[in-house]
Amino acid sequence: ISQWGDEIESLQLFDVDSGDIKETVNEFKIYPASHYVTTKSRLEESIKQIREELQWRTKVLIDEEKFLEAKRIEQRTLFDIEMIQEIGYCSGIENYSRYLSARKPGERPFCLLDYFPDDFLTVVDESHQTIPQISAMYGGDRSRKVQLVDHGFRLPSALDNRPLTFDEWENLVKQVIFVSATPSKYELEKSEGAFTEQLIRPTGLMEPELEVRPLDNQVDDLMEEIRQRIEKKERVLVITLTKRLSEELSEYLKNVGVSAAYMHSELDALERIEVLYKFRRGDFDVLVGINLLREGIDIPELSLVAIMDADKEGFLRSETSLFQIVGRAARNVGGKAIMYANRITDSMQKVLDETERRRKIQMEYNEKHGITPQTIVKELKPLVDPSLISNKSMDFGQEAEKAAQQDYLESIKVADDGIQYKASPAMNEITFESKDKLIEHLRKTMLHAAKNMEFEEAARIRDQIGQLEDQL
Image 1 (tube, helix red, strand yellow):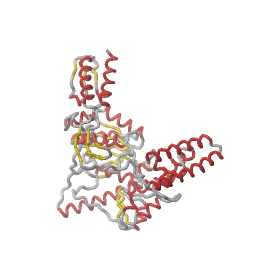
Image 2 (tube, helix red, strand yellow; image 1 turned 180 degrees about the horizontal axis):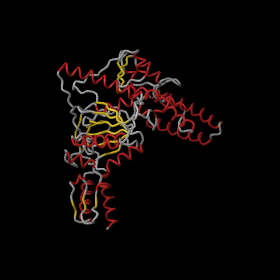
Image 3 (tube, one colour; image 1 turned 180 degrees about the vertical axis):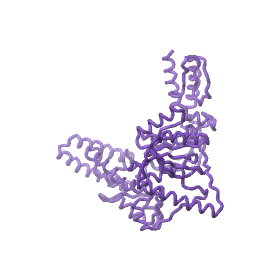
Image 4 (cartoon, rainbow, N blue to C red; image 1 turned 90 degrees about the vertical axis):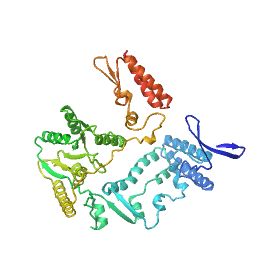
């Protein structure tokens, strides 16, 4: 913003790193840093109410001989008040939202649903999972904040900065469509038995063929099925009951030459997406997991789902879980699910009967309309959008994607004979005659990264150079 006295002369957009001016604009919208924005009079009244609550809360804590907690809440709240007075904002200002929005104690918070018209329609996707999550939000939030209040980190009014209770949510949504392949008791009761089945697929794909096989030699039997799928360049999903079984099975498959990976609970959401992306891309043929591979996993290349120990009744082998797991193979024309079990449980029988019913309906529809089932064709999009990567640092395309995902610290491999040294796939498997040559190459790469302001990448390469130099 260029000014002449108290007048604005021009507005210009510039590069934060280089300072180069990119564009001159006539107007620019600046939004508040927080949606907790109110009038000055409301802010002053809120501060007065916060001080009154602080005085009361401090007295309560002192009476309970919680002197540390009393001092803590006093210092923290007075600091927040000072920040609000000076800049109109403080860290965690949402915890004072009861006063800022002029609500009564215990009154529900305002939310986006308040801005909808009276006749809006709510669609709850995967309702068998979403409804319990909505129910649990209030309790989870309150249990955490009660601890903060008890230990003097927040005033009791912070408890009113909360999600809606389930009853409050129900009162706000008048017209609801629950969407689920496995609706729970709540949805069925609310709909009073009136539901619509969407069983017909335009692609003609039927529910996967289901088969029950004995537990004896289940691993050997699975190996044969895996080999058949690998020959067709298809993928296999194996579901086990425990983390230990997943690890052992994954390790066994690798030892016998099968390209396999294990998806475990320690992976965060983005890491799981990356694993599934590599699975679709064909980096490995078999994915082993427990309960992380159910709703929303759309892998057309997947043609076989193997459920180990399917007859062990419980949450992981309930009717709902089995339906969701089996459904992962429904995107491929050759989709098949094998349940390894020595007996057929009630849950298994329901899944077998319902799957057969759905297959029959789709089969009759296909014959009536002359439809030949076809596997879903789904584009494999790169994890990193090239448009989000600065064109100063790399070219777009496959090599750019590799470069974006490389990690020099882990990817550089040194041959056992100590003569040849290979770099990562993103460096096109360049072979170096000595460590000195490799270090020289890395140093150039580091400087190039630093020049392009990729400082984190440059730091990683610097650390790798240090490790290699220590070995000389």
